[in-house]
Length: 299
Image (spheres, rainbow, N blue to C red):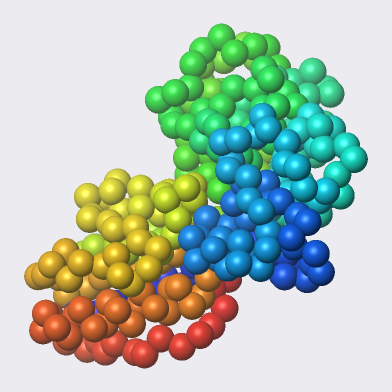
């Protein structure tokens, strides 16, 4: 069985910098991480072992009792930030998420109603909707309604697939022929690179394995790309989750990973896939060879 890796996958610079900042703190026992700094169980457990407390993303109404809080790369709204007065804030918001906030503020101040292509309730999306409650969040092309207003600004959650963003914008434009509809593409570059890479990969394989957390929006989007083409996909966080029977009869399997997935997790899953291929004696297509995975940047 040949395992083909996507050209771009794994942890993005925003998540790497957030984790690096957390590691640099001298007093982790005095800091609560607001939500999940990364949607990866092993990394979360490691940070808890260092002494950090963690507040679930669904518990935003409660303020942590610790003197310090760490804002993850997903960011928070200004409304939520104001509730943290008196706390020491360690802000690791991704610069590309900060850019989205600035764009949203600018359009709002100009009288535009925000139309955000993204996942309702996602922590990054809440960073916008809590500041601008009349924002319309559209998770799909089918969810776009008419009658949203006369001045609309269509933006994107940073991990939105670029083709979905463009399709929703065109649909909003079509449904509002008399309105001013402006578009600002706020999809981040790492997401765009990974979407392009997964598109190229899926043309070559029979099935896809994606390494990433269950709450990671961009990880789930990678799986969706396979589903759109009718290819089976499997999301895992660790090698132990791989069932060899799932791969029986396959000779070409793709491997990708979400932007919160560490390189060592990808490496471990890759090696397990090679072991499964050998145990099943799955044939490798003529002209191909499996190469041993080596640590590299997944930018």
